[in-house]
Image 1 (cartoon, one colour):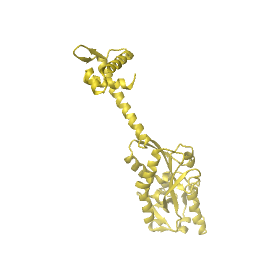
Image 2 (tube, rainbow, N blue to C red):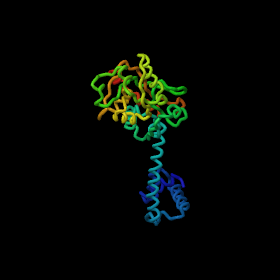
Image 3 (cartoon, one colour):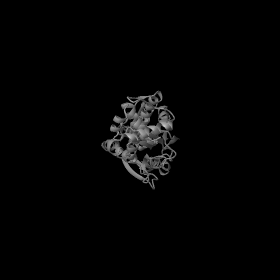
Image 4 (tube, rainbow, N blue to C red):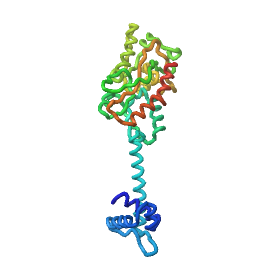
Length: 301
């Protein structure tokens, strides 16, 4: 059975006349008749009841015509999706992220799906895996802290930001506009483990060492939201990036600027061997529609 036979039969089921059908299909009548006969023989049923005056669909013909229309519609849809995928307008993209940048990632994904609704996005948490998922192709593009072990990857810096200190709203330091390094070191601190963000971890501890202070780390917690719950419960304060704080504002948490805070970078990374057109559209969208705003906000702050 060929798609052209389905197309011929669909038109014939509408015209119920071989001559008009042939004219509409830009065919002569004999090849049209031959194709319909071959279709009936292959199906083993009579699709048409022919008389000298008219052509009528049999019950089998009506049922087959309905199914044939759906098949041709699916074929047309598949062809359209293939064409879109070839231009990057449809398909599947796996985006890696870390919870600390959830607000930025959500904004990027929202902007992209508004522009390209036929692309299916899957989100993958990079904590504990990070760069390796990008190298082996399980993640197409990742939002990562910089610098990082990005050998063999294309990397674009999107944002430079400083650190803030999270604390309960009733904490004594909440009355201040900023927190000094000495005040930070004097508090019980909840920090992320070094393997989560080695560069950020070293920046925070290095700042204390610069002022000959030792950070009092009482707990190390991978999950950002668990860290914040412990802050709320009064276990201590937590140093987080400014962009992370944007997703955590409200309720009984307060964020205060860390004086003399070092600057951390944030960006996207992807394999240069990834030839996906969709990946290029996504990185363009991130630059133009989403994170340019974050960069402006960071610089103005």
